[in-house]
Length: 226
Image 1 (cartoon, rainbow, N blue to C red):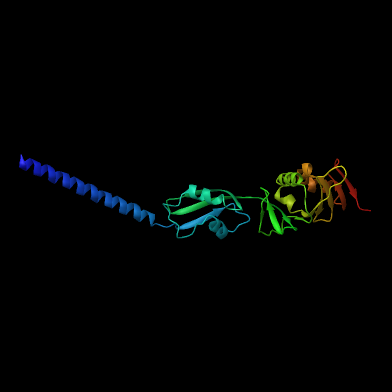
Image 2 (cartoon, one colour; image 1 turned 45 degrees about the horizontal axis):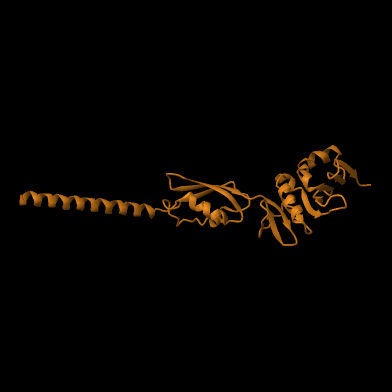
């Protein structure tokens, strides 16, 4: 009986030792994997931020652990980012991160606050010479919110054609604006019709590139300069 008990104890001890050894190996392996760093980063679809700025926003660098850096972590980080709207991160077997970025669209520069306004209405410290400049204030918050919302409908090519924007309400429309175009023309438009500026090029071509004022606020007609 004693011999059987001793054998059982030895077997139990041996099993425990094997288990502890295996567990130690597993922990060591996992720890070793956490030490593996990201080999390289590739950033796509960023127009405003440089690759380095994107990585800085996402708090990623060559010291980042390939195993422990998960997409959900970056999802929480971008909520604090003023410029990055969304990001998708794909890991490859070559220890690479492929980062697909969606940035907030830059709409215009606010000369009063000296800030750039992006598509969600936030004002950030960023300069872009290719966007129009709002030269005065929009005091009515409802008008401002509608203006920002409708400016989102203007494509980038059309945005680059606008030099300055002036809030210019009259007795009929409190949401009326004057766009000073880079080619020397002027466009009156209400915020609800701002998206019509996307047709600006074709409209000007139809009047043989004459200089004058295009009224998009009431109808759609062009008054050439005398």
